[in-house]
Length: 412
Image 1 (spheres, rainbow, N blue to C red):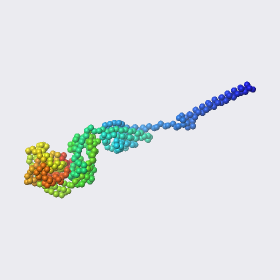
Image 2: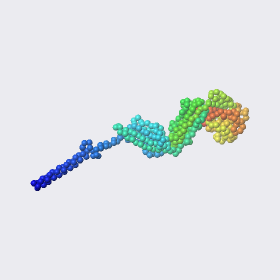
Image 3: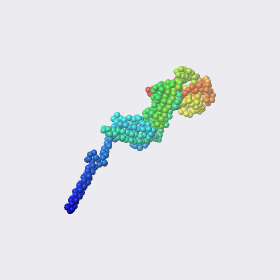
Image 4: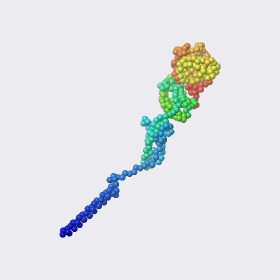
């Protein structure tokens, strides 16, 4: 019994051991099953769902100029395009955060700015596009525009807040030849209070003048906007100027010189206010003849030095002396000025000047304030009209001073 019991006990222990081993094996199998991805919603990372791979857009955005580019030209260089999709948004900002105007093309394939960029500026570009499945692609870039090595140094004949006569012509001169005249014209705009239309005319490659078809109306207010700093006026030459200037047209003063009667009739606001005896360019020698045509006072020079050596081909004895109350009419040296060396009997009866219009004046470099010349000078402003007729001389050329009124509107 005892032996048999012991044997029985051994059998029992073996049975328990088999059961325990089976249980352990069963547990191991159960654990393996629990870690399997084929279980109830389980996964190999401890129960988290597997992440899906992000879709890649077929749209490929290209930005010109390349990121980090420097010395970029402000016109024509910036372009955004896409292949395999359509642009949905393009934003370009300058270094101050101001957005650059532009438009996406109708087919969504490209974007260009509405106007040229500024020189010496940094720009940032951000673009978005979507492919035909709606998957979005983005691209960013930045670049810097060039700083001009050469500028044309333009300057005009207008002072900000100035007042000018009805014959005023805006004349803009450049220090270097202008090749792209259309670009310059595009960079000059006007705001005019009464809607007057201005048109520009080029005299050569360094000067453009602007005027209306007829004389200005008194009281007209004009603002000139120059946006030329970033305009390439010639290869590698830029305009160099961004500025605004406002001026006003004053009272209407127009004077007419009749060389045959030796009289100057002065009209103000359409009414004759004075007739002044004058002496203008002598008939002989020919180089002393006065110009015919409409001229405009372009400068008030006070006591100016009249120098015969500055007038090519001028006949007679040379001279160089101050002349009072000088109002310049042409670049070549035509003036309305005081004459304080001729006898009083000359005025209203003879033409003895070297092409200028002389009014009687008092002795001295400054002349007299109460003389005909003194009063006319005091009442004159830049832009006043002076027309000469019945002279034996030739017609004044349109580019001689502010004489553009002698060119008809169709030719202007």
